[in-house]
Amino acid sequence: MFDLSTAQMEIQLVAIVVAVACALVGVFLVLRQMAMMSDAITHSILPGIVVAFFIVQDLSSPFLIIGAAATGVLTVSLVELLERTRLVREDAAIGIVFPALFSIGVILIARFARGIHLDLDVVLLGEIAFVPFNRTEIFGIDLGPTALVMMSVILLINLIFILLFYKELKLATFDTGLAAALGFSPALIHYGLMSLVSVTAVGAFDAVGAILVVALIVGPPAIAYLLTDQLRLMLVYSAGIGVVVAVLGYWMARMLDASIAGSMASMVGIIFVVAYLLAPQRGLVASYLRRRRQRWEFAGIMLAIHLFNHEGLPSAEQENRVEHLQDHLNWNPDFADRAVRWAERNRIIVRRNSHLFLTEEGREQAREAIVR
Amino acid sequence: MTTMTSAALESQPAIAVRDLTVAYNDRPVIWDLDLDVPAGVLMAIVGPNGAGKTTLIKAMLDLVRPAAGQVEILGQPYRKSRDRVGYVPQRGSVDWDFPTNVLDVVQMGRYGALGWIRRPGNRERELALEALDKVSMGEFADRQISQLSGGQQQRVFLARALVQNADVYLMDEPFQGVDATTERAIITLLKELRSEGKTVVCVHHDLQTVPDYFDWVALLNIRKIASGPVSEVYNETNLRLTYGGRVAFLSRDAAAPATAQAAVEED
Image (cartoon, rainbow over all chains, first blue to last red; front, side, top):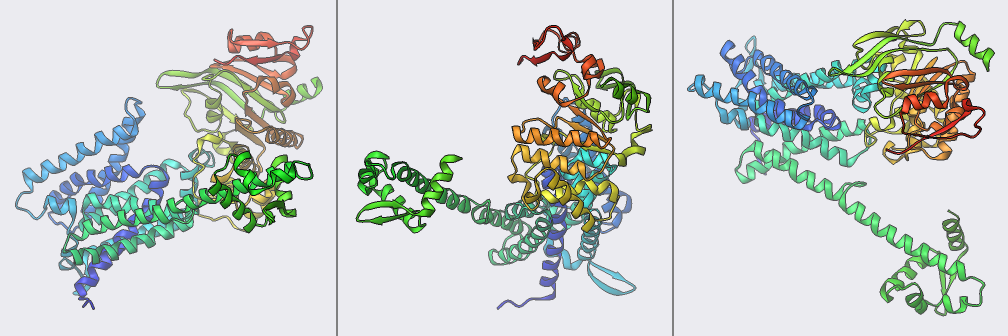
């Protein structure tokens, strides 16, 4: 059906590695309620990249990553510094710091880097389709596209960090105070994580651009959060969703003849909507069904209590007739009919000659409900 | 009571606070506080909102940097006595929607003993289950923490402190917003800890229950108003000094002001 060229394979591989690397660190950002910090970091690394580029004059140099990562960490510190003055809140501090740094990067490119291959469009949106052209060789052996080599190393670093410090990350994210009291420096863990986010964002900007990295850092973890309530599974799901986003996004771009990065980000949105609707516990459909079930459960219990209260009394003859439910409980005929059928199905009551009787089970449930 | 008290005073204090001043942006929260907590007491820290109660606990745990003064726990600075101190933060200080279960949260109490990188194993699991049984939460081990009631959350935090197997426990409002059953369960547990010779310090809000629950008390309002055995310092004069005019006293026995009960009027 599709004829996969090596280049196509490589583009998808890069997309997958980028998405998984982002999705893993993203889990902790989302849980720390710092998702917007990824927005700040991905934008403000621009001046770092530009300055580092001026120094090394090579767009694929690893020094670019170090320069940009340093700017990312600088962004986090500046935001926290502003916040600590208590004059601005965190969201405002982020809104002040990153446009300032980002605009410095834009001016630097416009003023000094015109004519050089440091294109603002590429920085912002990335061009993953060009990834196979830029290759890394060691001793004349082709290791593959530079982006793939670089992102694989970054993914490996992320994996090792999270595997080694899983317990510390969990504790510092859940309860910073206890983490500090037990001697695990939350600041160290925080800045370690922020450095990883910065490095990941720099590595990924080449492929998907600075802006769309945010979709890959925030999206898959947010979707995974809808699907599970275990941190371990959240990491696994988040990575898996990253893979799905990368592959489906690529093919969507192929079919629509559109931007690959844009399609990947759109795919994040689509999957989120699907998960939001269909997630097993927290999804809209699941909670709608749950509410509906509870409604009939409650109606059934109401009916059981009504019958229970009149059981054995002379009035029972009147009260336990189906038609009387409409008058006495003020239920409309349709609702009464459905409630009775629900109660029958669940063996709370039995119907004999249009008279309703509690079963042993129904009596028990009514008694329990009243006592509680 | 008095014999136990003097015996407690003679030995080295479990917690010694010296000339402690803590300030946020030049605004003092605690002014030049001296406080000795004898070993083996069950102590309440009481005082109005903004009196620095939580800050005092945090300063004891090195969580805030004092502007002046120092704290010693069991004769050493906190960083050296850390593994003998258990901490129960305010229930509301964490996100209970965090994706994890009860057993996992309780095991966090063992992380300090495990140190960096090492993961909890079977031993930690057993200790956690044991602690959960002590707070009658054994059957909740696999429950998601988002599904707990306020009282259950508090018990989980208490269990987490228990697995630390500490000698000194610092608790920030362990009775805050819990049901009556949980409150009874917690106080029984705290008294048990005391009878095992452990020192327990609680930030406490309900002035009525101080004489029933605690044997030692510190009254705090930015500076220390008084501290000592409840029978000696928990009286109308000191409470008035601590809370200003905002206290209504319901003296059960006018002739014995030391056992006076007090209630704070709502602001």
